[in-house]
Amino acid sequence: MARRFSASYQIEPFSALATWARRLAIFAAVAAVVSIIIVRFGFLEVRPALATFFGALACASLSILIGLAAFAAIWQNGSRGMSRILLAMLIDVAVLAYPAYLGLQYRKLPAIHDITTDPIDPPRFEALARLRASEGANTAVYAGLYSAELQRATWPDIEPVDLDVPVQRAYDVTLALVAKRKWLVIDERAPQPPRRIGRIEAVARTPIMGFREDVSIRITPDGDGSRVDIRSSSRYFESDLGSNASRVSKLIEDINSAVERAPAPNKPAAPAKAPAKGVAKK
Image (cartoon, rainbow, N blue to C red; front, top):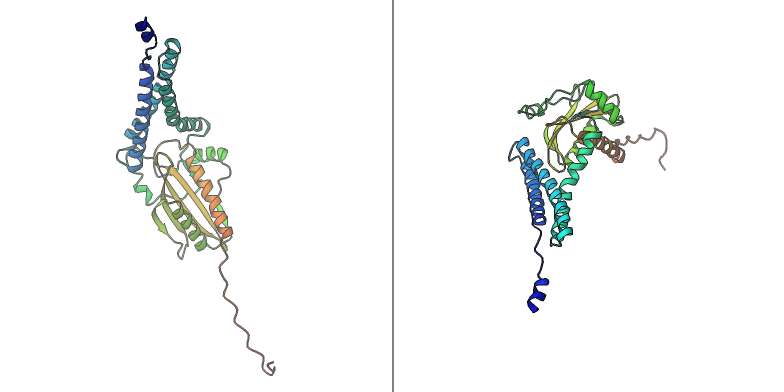
């Protein structure tokens, strides 16, 4: 009788499916982190690193399916493993959440990768053109009027920045904002006579994967004021999921705000007039 009693209270084993769901989830998280590190530090080309990342997403998806199967098995036979399933699900959601958001952006936004405030005469990539000559990279030539039409329909507020300040001051403000963003400046040319056109070429990185996106800024005189034109283009992929438009819009906003906040340059004081002859000093 005692033997039967002890046997009836034996601890149920862990569900093998729950264990595999947790293992796959952990593997997916590690593979995703490794692929991000590979891209950000340039250990491999972009395509092999992306293959690793998509493999991690596939493992996370498989882990969810196995976790659901493990939940059904536990519900039926009473085996243990719910904590492992919950941990696997949390990891899988963390791995898949941002890619799922990007997937929604891909469906919602036009498949363009080149954004500019001046589609008729966009700022050129000169120093950056050499970096875009590698195999698989997008061309340095502007994407064309079809891309401009899609941009206008989706982001109509992206326009040239017209400032009521001299071209040198506009250049200094813009260069300071580029430095604040920690973009890698490839080339900078201050506005010099006779044309007085300033240029800045820099490389920005996307927040998570660190994909390189090239930025060219042109500052030109416009009467007593100045005009700033910006171009931001992904070095890889046909769709940027809105990252370039977001970058250009934020830079436009910050340039306008910085110019409004900056104090006007001090004008030299007018020389004091000499007292007129024949007037007695008090």
